[in-house]
Image (cartoon, rainbow, N blue to C red; front, top):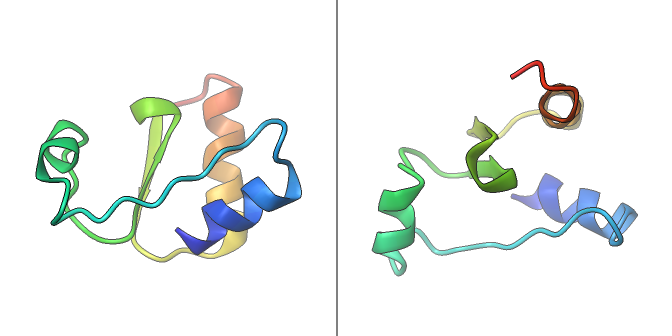
Length: 70
């Protein structure tokens, strides 16, 4: 999740990041089928990254989603 916040700080006009406590918001967690933490859901489920990953990996996932590769 920290990477998502960093991306949002770099480009606040295009990127918004929100952190949600999975145990506290169980309905939201169930809706997005959260299975591990961190779990980065991109564009309401268009793509996702589970676990701590390098910045380049998360950026690649976002770029692929935007290009419609996912």
